[in-house]
Amino acid sequence: MHNIPLLNKGFEEVNPLICGWQSCDKGHFFGPASREYYLIHYVVSGSGVFERAGKRYPLSKDCLFLIRPYELTFYKADKENPWEYIWIGFDGSLVPDLLKNSGFSDDICTMHIPSLSTTFLSMKEVENLQHSSEIFLCGKIFEMFSYLSEEFSPTPKGSTTSVYCKRAKDYIMSNYANHISVESIANMLGIDRRYLCRIFYKYTGSTPQNFIVNYRLEKAAFLLSKHGYTVAEAGRSTGYDDIYNFSKMFKKKYGVPPSRYKNDS
Image 1 (cartoon, rainbow, N blue to C red):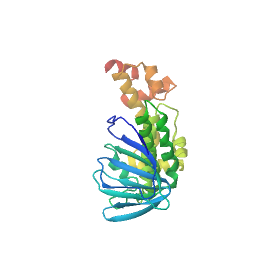
Image 2 (cartoon, rainbow, N blue to C red):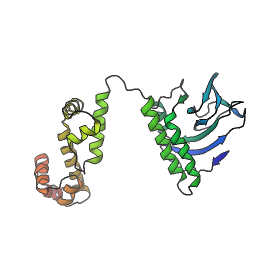
Image 3 (cartoon, rainbow, N blue to C red):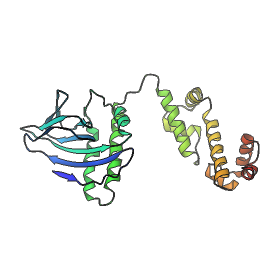
Image 4 (cartoon, rainbow, N blue to C red):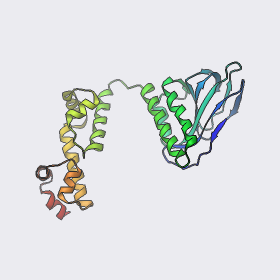
């Protein structure tokens, strides 16, 4: 059995606590017992059984099982073809929502996900790290939940358009300083530009282009007033290479040129 010694870094959102792997002997078992953190095992090969709340789950290669804090569970390797598994234990404020959005519920504690094999096998690389083990595993946990969310989170009927809008907004808010356009955002989302404009206006009351402009100018005003940027610095930092155009757009929104806004703030 390989059990990696980890430091409890106390990461607030997702905090890795234990990680390890084992090729079990025939009939090897653990429990009934509980932990005070979340624990996921991924079956690399072989088979076994997992028992929880009076239910028995036969599991084999590419299956995983979830143990929640203070939940009594029992698991046992097959007597003929014992399993090898990798485990990761963690806690954190984001974990309940991550699990909920990944298909887990009070009734669902096991899954069969071959696409997660690479993620779990790569966790073994932590053995070669000296100073960044916890950060590395934190990334692997998020990677795991990304796969789970893509495969098992159902999209509620009628919510696709709102998801497109949220992704478009988030993209603008993260990339406003770059050369972005409504066309490039639509292409990124894989939808028609006109369709994006229509649903964006429906959910936000603004066209995507107006949202980009207003968000950039609000950020520019913040940089001018709170950080003492020059007009040119504020313009370039919010996606405007043409300072004359920036000043013109700024005055249209705020009623004064950026140089006046800076001095009056």
